[in-house]
Image (cartoon, rainbow, N blue to C red):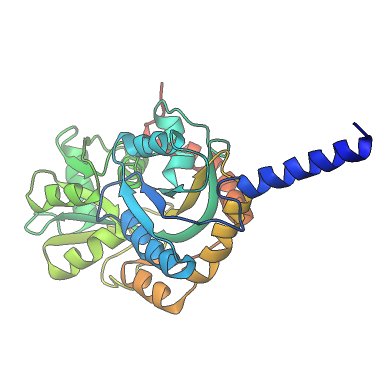
Length: 323
């Protein structure tokens, strides 16, 4: 066989391989896409995922279907996604702790930035500390002083170990030398229900879960984790006003598992930018206490690399590092 014929065959095979590659950017998405949320339904991550998945459906003409895979602080959802074909038809909507906290706090089967690749940070949010609506504690200072006098007796709920609402509380308790009992639930909504039923004394939860219950008076808000007060709750002080230096901000966004074609990741990021910055999305997020962002993959990666050493210190102060 001549070299010319051999070269022609090789070129034809290469072209066929590219055209047949599942998820290749010119074809993706050719069918529905699963959006795995590794947290419970109704929480901030789930809410943001559903709002943006609906826009992806309308923009790209294929269904983006949210599936909740709950447990182990989000690790179960990551494991599920990693066991799916790496063709771009299973993507993730995740929280910041999956990159920065969970691998430090418990044994996981993935390596951040290798097995879990950021696509775009969709938005950021602070946390709101709430107590039952008839709690004797009307201020954060009253709560802290009581907790100091009663070590090991005060309880707080969370959406699971190493989630943002767990870490925000453990970090605050660690800074203020409070001995409190963590009661984990499977998601932010059950954690809130525990406060409303007076099963626990406190929750430091995502703003999207707690702004409306706080406004309605079904729980009492006594602090927020942002450096300054939230405009949605102007009468609720920032914890930093009373205990300087404390702040905790979380983010959520899209990611894919390692091995998903780079063209798919770029296409997804390209479409997400205008969605995250759309005025209607921005306004909806704002009402939930979420600041819409929208980043490129490079910006998301830079944010995570900056966050990792910061959260490493938070994990140590909170006392949740895996021994």
